[in-house]
Image (cartoon, rainbow, N blue to C red; front, side):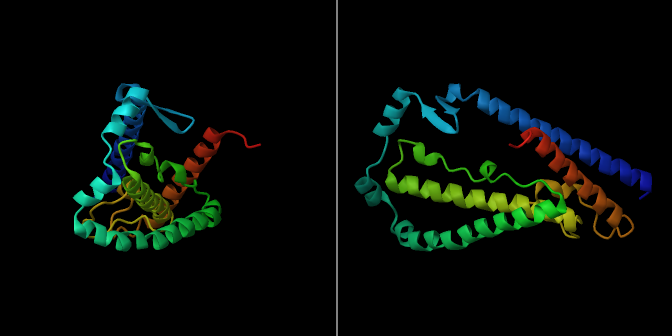
Length: 214
């Protein structure tokens, strides 16, 4: 492949990623705009349902005795195994947070906003009983921590090793598309510095958006 063709291909990838990011932002804005249409609103990080909706939700709630009677024995038996994972998940949450607090400023990378990934809000739903609410809190926390850790490790990989794998990899993160092709030794350090510079620009943009600190 000629150098110019390679550069053109990388530029097309960057343009596609930019369009994807813009579409994701449009989708997020549209979902927020339609909050009223789905009978709830978010104000100051709190969720508010219309009163008639809350009452309808309460009427649909399964009581604990009914819920336990209808639960599969295997579901109940597996509960201790599932909930035992809270220890390593909480440790991962703590460890990955400490890591980025120490290392990301040294790398001049933007910190990942944990609040955008770890979202626990389904326990506000009145049609869930106490056990269901606890399950939803746990699932929201666990999946949020994994997504949070994934973004932190993705930025780390972009900084240290932005090289694609030789084999096709499923479920790659969004930054992977900008990585260098496997085996392209000549462009590695130049490309690595370019991606590091992009992380620095992200950090500057995030700082500018946050505004001056008190």
